[in-house]
Each structure stands twice: as structure tokens, then as C-alpha cells.
Image 1 (cartoon, rainbow, N blue to C red):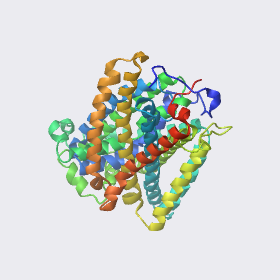
Image 2 (tube, rainbow, N blue to C red):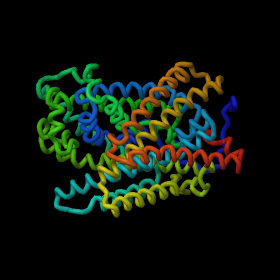
Image 3 (cartoon, rainbow, N blue to C red):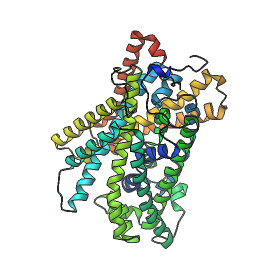
Length: 485
């Protein structure tokens, strides 16, 4: 490992559109990927039901603190590695080119799985919404319409996507905060209670499953570094956007989960959830009870827009990983080019669109459920893959700064905290793998095959990196390097 950071000359590569995103734009891009309304309406009730019930809000607090610790090393690395490959670039510069190749393919798999999986839920939710208005179409029709719209936006300039996502995410926050405030004002079912933050409640039921649901709700926040090449003053913008994202998402989830428990009643929460045919209707029931049907109708519409915002944000993330892999010769170089006018990764964007259409089409032809199969199976694969990449990134931070002592970062940021989060993520990976069937509803062979996809992607990436080392040693040595101005 070289002691001094080297760069690729700007003229040698296709460039993404520089100076197009500020702190606010990047923050909203990654918050929209976390899909806040989707998380509190879908993931939180299921996490309460399958996990630790009332203690779910306290679990959000623990996961938020862990991710803040992870962010310390993550943003320290971002000041030295400004590459749209993010996790892949960190792995390549910290652990080595082979690890970089493995991480690149895990990233492409994970963000594709998340984007395509959410397409299933988006199709089902949109079909249900329009059926209430007298328009009855199969779920996959709505999924294909969404794929087409995302294709157009992903092909164009990234700041257009950012503007659309900002509006959608703000609307999501507004409707949930209105409900939160009405529950807070009335005192909920039987008064405000701190029980959701007590250790006995946090450790009740199945806390491991609760932790996994909480992590799944955060997926997307880590994508701040993907936009490093397009950010204004990235050494300032990326760290701020990362911390803002974790804190904003974490506090929002924690407070809302607490008020959902208070709104139902601490003693009544689990019985109420167990009595629902579809637990994801729980938040809408609270809205009817405390805020009225008008807010519930608005929330139903914004639930669909939340899912759309998520698929658009994940599409942008996937496209950038595919683009960088092509630009740096892991994949064919024809993929690693940007549009002459929009400076968007247009070829990579088209590839992601085609993959989404093929997988959605396959699930439609086979008659598989868009929520219980497409959404559940693929998003759990994605969650596993992203946490694996977080573990690799934590290790990469430690190794990079040990090899580059002149980087002038203190040991707490570069060794102690990344080391602790690496251990924590390894434990969480183990919990996901052993609980994968319960989490995803994938039984038998699928319960083994689906999580194994992450390992398969890593092996493919390792082989691609090894082939690049043999074919072009200089290109292999440059994997993950930041671009010069």
C-alpha cells in the first residue's frame, strides 16, 4: 500500500456532473432511499410484532447510536477517498484490490435487490390505491410504469432527481409528524410512557429480529459517499450529509415508534398488532383514530410516493456502482461512460432498468406475490449485503489509516470506533444469516440460496478483480483511487 494518496488525472476518464449537489440535496437523496414513511408504516409494525413489541423504539435508539459510531470512521475515510464507488473504493484502498472487486459486486447485487424488491411493494401498494378509485390493474403494470419513469429520471441530470426526491420526502415527514404531534398532544391511549426505552422491554421477545428490522429501515443512509464526485466541496458536504442523515432518520424513527406504542397503549400494542390481518395497516389505523381520515388518505398516497422515492434513489446508487466498475475496468469499459450532455451514468442506468424489468417480469409470469416474495426476499438479501459492506468498510478504515499515518486523523476515529463497529457488524451478519428464513419468509432451499447470493457476488467480484490484475496490473493498482480535479 502506498503511503501517499495518488489520483487519476481528470482527462483520462468520463466524469460525473461536478458541483451539482449540496448538503441538502445529498441528505434528501439518501433519506429518500431509507423511505421514512415506508419504514414507519411497514417495517416498524412488523418489527414490533416479530421482534420486541413496545421496546422497538429503544432498539431504534441503539441502532442509531451504532450507526453514528460507524459514521465517524466512514466520513474520516471520505475526506481521503472521493470516489463514486463508495464501499467498493474504501475496500479497494483499505483492504486491497481483490476485496474491492468483491465489494463492488456485492454493492451491485445489494442495491439492485433493494430497488427491484421495493418495485414489488410499490406495484402492490399502487394497485391497492387506484383500486379504491375504481382503476383496477395488476400490480406489475404499476411496477413497469414506475420502472419507465425512473429510467427517464436516472438517465438525466442527478440534480433533477434530487429536486423531486426533496419534495416527496418533505411531504412524507409532514404527514407523519402531524400524526406524531396529535398523539403527543392527547397523551396517547393511556398517557405518555417511557416504557419503550426500558431495558426490560428492549430485550423482550426477539430483540435480534428487532435489530435487523431497524437496520433494514436505515438502508440508504450510507449512500452519501456515492455522490462524492458530484458534491460541492465534498470534504465538507459528505460528512455533514452523512451525520445529518443518520440523526434525522434515527430520531424520526425512534420518536414515531415511541408514539405509535403510546398511541396504541403500551399494554395493548402487541394484541392490536396480532389482531390485524395486515400489520402494515397499523399506522393508518392510528391516523384514523387520532388525526382523522383526511390525513389517512394523504398518508396512503404518500406511502406510494415514498416507495417511488426509494426506488429512484436506489436506482441512482446502483447506476453509480455499475458505472465506476466499468470506468475502472472491472466490468467492460463501455459501461463506465457518462452522457455528453447530462453527465449522468446513462449506460449503467439503462442496464439497471433492464435488470429491473426482467426480474419484475419473471415474478409476474411465475405468479409470485409482489410483497411476500419479490419485496421480502430481495430486500432481505439487500440488507444482508449492505451490512456486509459496512463491516468491510469498517475494516478498510482501520487498514487504510494504518498504512497512511500521514493522513493526520486521530486513533479514535480511525482505529477504535471502526474496530468496534466491525465486530458489531459481524455479529449482526451472523444473526441475519441464521434468522434469514424467519425474516424473509423464504423456506427450504431459498432460505439458504438467497443469503448465499451475497457470497456468490463476492466470489464473482474477486474473480473479476483477479482477471484485471493479470490483464492490466496498472488498472488494478488504481482501483478505488479518488479522481483529481
